[in-house]
Image 1 (cartoon, helix red, strand yellow):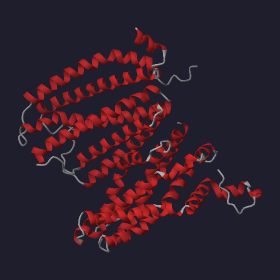
Image 2 (cartoon, rainbow over the protein chains, first blue to last red):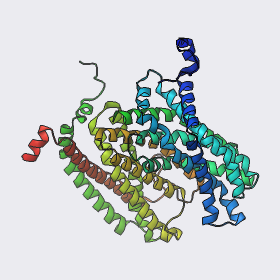
Image 3 (cartoon, rainbow over the protein chains, first blue to last red):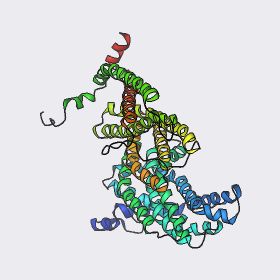
Image 4 (tube, rainbow over the protein chains, first blue to last red):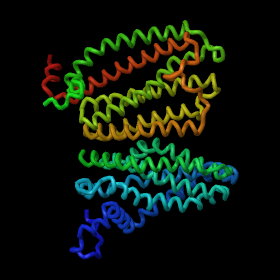
Length: 242
Length: 250
């Protein structure tokens, strides 16, 4: 995997230099750079997020009271679907140009590389979604008290969505049509995050203490951080060898 | 070559599709007879002789289908995940086939559990469907099964399909307690579990003994259905080996 920084002289690739770089930072830098060069892909999930949220007032009711009631769930479902939509491309281009095979063959720990790729994915979808969410909250008349709950719950919940979604992406990367299949595999696994995420926002609106919700979302994130890269790695090996 | 004595011999024999085909051939009639007998006895006992519930009258009798189906749907997932793990770790073809055979049976049983639950819910709760915790987690279990079946049928290579579904089944296995807990927390209206291992059931013995017979009957039925599918799968995958050819040509 060519993850050296271009402006470094070629002969400076000493052991110490590589340690600073490392497989994790190398993979992270590479993925961020690649998506920076294809900026339109970055914006698409965000536009989708906005559009889904727009459908609800149009399709159900523009009544502010009603919208305020459903806003926590709608924003969370929209964020979940936007993450899911962006999931299919996570490993696909690497799979198609053979990079994935090289990553699997390289002596670097797959766990770290996978974690870096998922982190890059989250920084490019989950994080922007979280930052955009208050705008949707305003559009859907979410009470101002709910905003902090919305942002923090998305901040804790969207990384878990990226981690779990990456398992589905890794399992389907070898298939020509992964799109719908990914949703079938991953959506049931997203349910706990959705339940606690939207409950945290509702709790924030009604003024309940939020520590418990955030603790559970954080627990799911920690479990995901430890376990998901193992499953993603195993799934990638199966998909590439199959 | 005596260093692997810690695993019993039958475990290695299970890895041989041929041995597995022969042993299931012998076990199949035993389980089939047991399934027919227990299901027949259980059904007649439950429908005709068990006392009616003092609150729900005769409508509670659907419990004799609903509870065994719900228990079986969950243990079937467990079996599928364990078989998948064995297939991943020991590269055992038969374990892959067992996992593949479990998925459609489990999905069907989950549908049966949901359907009987809905039919039971109509007279008891007044509606076909309630967004209650245990109904919802059974529905999610069905979704997990459907995802596994979809993934298995999307991958053409049998070995890759088996490994991929095994990974997905294991991920689902880790998630089932989390899903169950979060859905429980989210909403609960359903009565608590009928059977627990540690406590005596709250219903009188005239009611739960036939239920136990039905549960055993469902497990025997599952064993029969699973072995039939497994034998089918073995024959299909081993169709090029000489013993299958001999079997077909006689």
